[in-house]
Length: 160
Image (cartoon, rainbow, N blue to C red):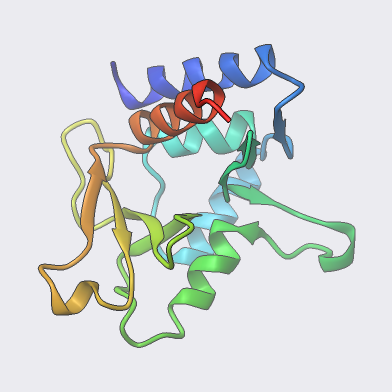
């Protein structure tokens, strides 16, 4: 399944489970372009589709930062933009990563924009301060869509 097809399935899953799925609302093309400009890169097709459809989302405790605004922060794009720019203040954080999620163990799940595949997708990796002492960030998935769908299905089907 392609990354975009995975996000289409994820969006349907969220909309079919409104009791445990919340999202901020899709971003328009101008906001997506602005986010790319602020981060100095372009988004892969699956992440672009996610931003356009959901903005950011949380599925039964599993959160994807995405992009959104709040009245208190005004025009500032929050989520991936603000968290990536904040992470880049740490000199150990690789500048080619875009933060999409906190992994709950001190790591930052990120899109690695230095490795674009033929479909224009970036792999999802997890970075933590010790990553540089190992072989670098651990690869979690080939694209955002596959990663997000797998995480959300796991969140909705786990036994509590």
